[in-house]
Image (cartoon, rainbow, N blue to C red; front, side):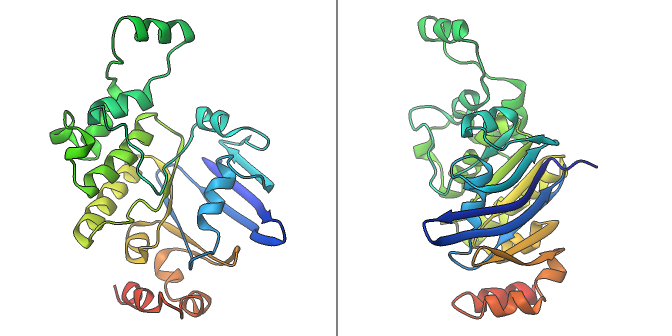
Length: 256
């Protein structure tokens, strides 16, 4: 079966620094793949590379079609969506309108008509996404009225409303408390179970290991382990990599 997203031999260098070294990764429909590693391991750089924001060596493809050499906006149109560590919502638009803008793909003439006559309308994809992520109750709220956890969900929902083939999530749980993180994890798992292919990068190892179907671990830009969460969390190389500041977190994840 052809992977929704396939990356092979991805390498990235910044001057003399090798940020990624020959990284392979695949994401299939209905699967949530976690990408973890200590600080500076290259996790966000990997997302930046495959989504077209930094140059790389290697190959990346979506549904078997190469992405190499394409700009970031063309990759997005092909169906490779991503979120960012900072939440950049349109604060002057409601939750529903934030999603509608992301999902709307008008022609040039339609855009002119929108500007001159009427606002962007909602779509079935927007309504389905709001329901899937449990945002029905706040669809008419402004982003400033939301909790941090809800704002994170809106960021994810906005990316999903564009109906991507693959969604890459960069630190979606950053800044959330335990309850909010657990709720986010439950929602993301439901999205994957509905058929969405997803790649998750997050420092919350408990979250990643509890909801991912498959996990890839980076250290200094290299893959040091990969496999199902139960296998990865007990891998000696992974435990050794986390013997620094994240050792306690890994211990909790293993016990969980």
